[in-house]
Structures are given as structure tokens and as C-alpha cells.
Length: 255
Image (cartoon, rainbow, N blue to C red):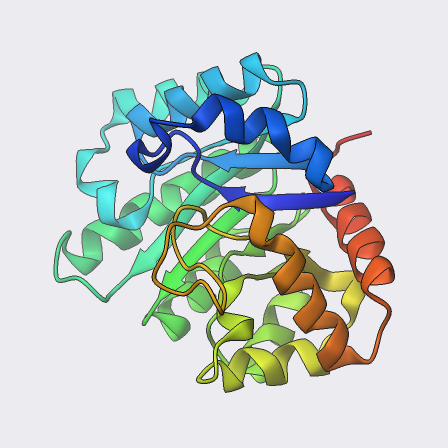
């Protein structure tokens, strides 16, 4: 069974068919889904979704683009959510310099505080980093003793940076970009790093793989990502699915 390590099924893009889509995943070989929070509101909806479906788990965290909403009270609320059943990670948290807001220092401050939160509750982190390679890596090295590990979601940097994270016990999340013609850096990273350190993800409803690029994404497209990883690494498809599933179960503490 495939482990979907990063999706946003609480997104309005799924309002018309959310239940039917989720209910049909197991029959299509998708055995686990981690629905990831990106704000206080979506953290709450991710947890509600995990409580409804036995195979859905949740992550609690605030995306850098939403970090301007965070307060001390919000951080305390996040900590409370981390103690709930089926909350298995803190995320997605990190830095995003693609947009000018929130201010970079605001992002850095709340990123560091959420890393500290993850350490306090003993959960792995789901890292978001866009056009912020050095700052993200520096802050993780400085502020996070990665005893519970984590994953760099939707990895987009070089294989050299990937190894910096691997050396800290952090996994690499591989999504639809690996199927793009212009996804050379990610293809090189997948070729270079061990399969035992890769997680499969879609970031649904975003970043659909080829040939569905530009359309709404869903976990049903994970097969295309796994097939491309198998091709790049010269492995059997079923082996890629099995190993990445075990990787995710180990990281997120799922029996």
C-alpha cells in the first residue's frame, strides 16, 4: 500500500467530492494519508478529517505564508493539538521567500518557535522551504535537535543540500515535480540518495505530476510518482512502494 505523506484534503478544491474520493483511495492502493495543517484553521480541519477516517492522520502547524497570524496563544493551542490522537507531526513549517509577506524575520521567528514546539512534544517536523535554502538549513541546524526526525516536503534543492538533511536524520519528500521535464535537480537527488530516505507525497490539490500538470492533484497520482522514482533508480515499482511506506510509518510512529 502507498503512504501519502503530504496532502491537504481539507482544501476547498475537494468540497464537492471529498468523501467519495477518500473512501475510494484504499481500493486504489493508497493505504495511508497524512493531511497536513497550514494554519490554525486548517490544522483543526486536518485533525477533524483524521478523526473521521481510520487511515488518515494529521499534522499540526502553521505554514510560513500564514505565520503572521501566530501569537503565543496560537502556539499554545498548537501544542494542545499535538497531544491529540492521530496527530503525528508538526507541520508544515518553514520559510517561503517566494512571496514578500510575511516579513522574513517574522517567518524565521515562528519557524524557530515551532521547531522548539516539535522538540517539546517529541514529534517529527514537516519542513516547507521555498527559495530559502540557506536560511532554512541554518535554522534547522541551530534550533532543532532532530531526535524525532522530519521530512523536507516537496524538496526542490540540490542533492548536496539533500545530504545535509539526511545527515541530520531528516527524510526527503518527493512529489510530482520529479515527473516534470524541468525537474532535473529533483531527479538527480532521487538518483543519488538512498530509497530508504524518501517519502512519497502529492501536496494535493497542488503540483499534479505529468501528464496531469496544472490540474487538481490527488493521492491517486502517487502511482505516477512511484513509477518515475523506480525508473530513475532502476528499481521495481512494488519495491519503491513498500520501502517508502515503511519509511513513512517509521518516521511518523504508525504501527
